[in-house]
Image 1 (cartoon, rainbow, N blue to C red):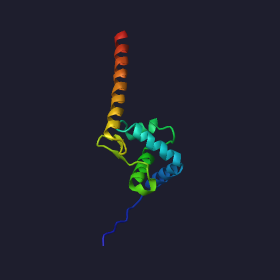
Image 2: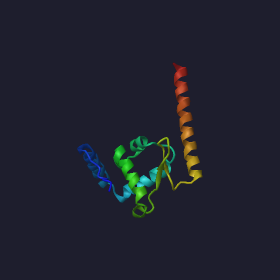
Image 3: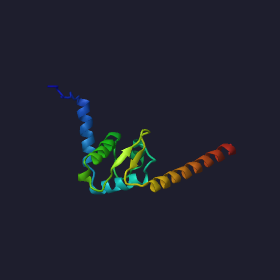
Image 4: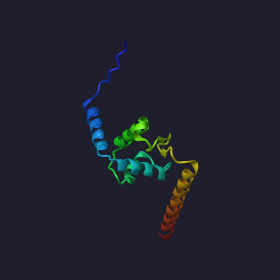
Length: 127
């Protein structure tokens, strides 16, 4: 019989404890806020960008990804929250949003980037 025991280092245990401690501070309001945040920002943000923009909980990269993984894995426990997927480029998507919502979000992002680009061009020209 194959031994599947994984040797865990003290650093691994500390990281896991930190993640659990962070997630234990979440509430039902946190879940609802996270679901709304992911729907509104679907297809636009990486994990790091999500953490910077989220103002309702102070996730770490590890706790955010673990929390999302937990929501996805235990669908019956989290009912109407999620699920969420990350693409090859590390961009998060809410599986609840339809294609039209994703297109609208991307159009808003494109408009925002165009405005930033114009502002930067103006700043360069005025120098």
